[in-house]
Image (tube, rainbow, N blue to C red; front, top):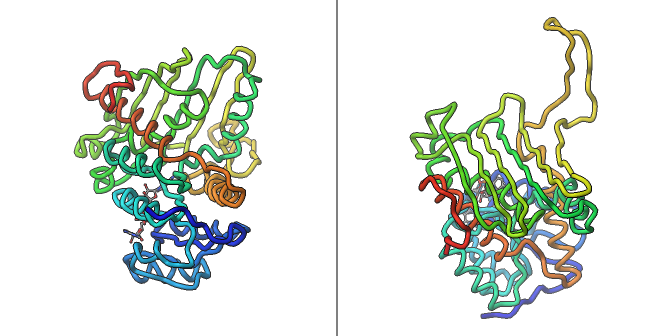
Length: 346
Ligand SMILES: NC(=O)c1ccc[n+]([C@@H]2O[C@H](COP(=O)([O-])OP(=O)(O)OC[C@H]3O[C@@H](n4cnc5c(N)ncnc54)[C@H](O)[C@@H]3O)[C@@H](O)[C@H]2O)c1
């Protein structure tokens, strides 16, 4: 295996792989990163690669992602391709000695994820996965409060996520089920903020859209968590919300609690008499691109700042593996209608 060769850590050459919906977000965010520049944007769809190159003001567009990884001017790879391709591209980049930032998950398969973790552990290549909520200013503040001990012993965790619009059937058929596709963000936060989870008990149902039943999936769920440190938690997930993108998290400790909640885009509320009576209006978030815009920027900034300073970036493949095991434990719990210890998932 090649050893890690970053090149100039003050001016890191980057290959962006995948210039679709999220790829364009990450390319736009690359423009604000002081110690990196995009050399090549690769996408098998030539028009997408060229549009990505133009957006990135990069030197090259390519339809060959593997060749882009091996480009001699590239020290780091940003992977924003469909989930089924992440593992192969991460492995190729690790073997080429190129630093990796990749959208989550590595894969939804445990054995394949373990294989990537083993390859990463045997290398000295920095790899970070895109669990962006960890970089949202609210969650960063919560993490600092918890780690400093200001909350006292953490006793309870509560997270809820409601997407505004349900996804279509063709997406659901390949999503791995709602625990892996959606609740996984809250499960990752549970581990990030409180610690490892020992046992879960999950319930789910199809309450509002039969398309979920057609995909052998569910639109509404509740997961109960028992943490190794004794804390208890709940994760609620819904695939629709008539009141906009609804993301809230609460961690309660012996001395204080922290609530992460950002209900409105603009900090302005109009209160007035409406035909229906007294009321108020504010602008709600529609979905993850607007609610987590800062987090997407900060996660990449942090990755490149860590590379520049020689720090190990996180969350790495080991974190992705543990979060996947937790989501798989939830799926097993629901399918088998019983509490499941995360240690069962091997
Ligand atoms: N962290 C988050 O909040 C979040 C949100 C949305 C999507 N995602 C993840 O981001 C990834 C991309 O999602 P998207 O919505 O941008 O998808 P998309 O379909 O809009 O874009 C994917 C792009 O990758 C290209 N592509 C396919 N195979 C490729 C390969 N081998 N090499 C290079 N490019 C390739 C496609 O042509 C397409 O242009 C997925 O893994 C998804 O799960 C994460």
